[in-house]
Amino acid sequence: MEKLKKDIILLLGIILAAFLLWLIPYLLNKDASAMVTVYQNGHEIGKYPLGKEQTISIPYGEDGYNLLFISGGEASISDADCPDGLCVRQRAVDRNGESIICLPHKLVIQITAGKERELDAFIY
Ligand SMILES: [Zn+2]
Image (tube, rainbow, N blue to C red):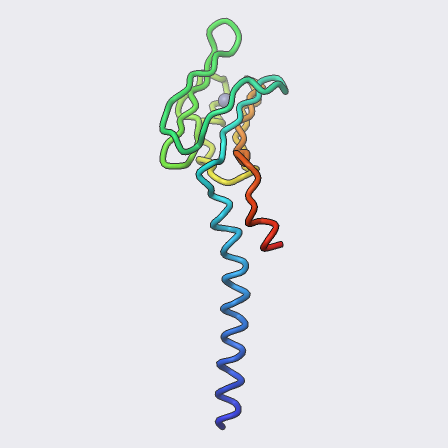
């Protein structure tokens, strides 16, 4: 019986270690140096820190616009006058590589890492 107990504890330890290894990069992904990069028509038109709370108006054509809202380490489109309004309804993005797309305005909001994280080399 003693042996079985030890085996179970060992197994739980391995599971916990595996879980932590999975969790650490997941947490690191949400880093303070992340940027919100704005592309229009395939060109980068702006880059804003995800850590700074602000609202940016992105003009489109004559009088179109998208309002990019950055708050609490998340970015979302708070308002837009595009015909489908899909970008406004998309949930906020906060992780590296996630994006919000406004097709009618050819606009892409993407989270990009602000700088290379040295810890990555350690974990992978
Ligand atoms: Zn839109």
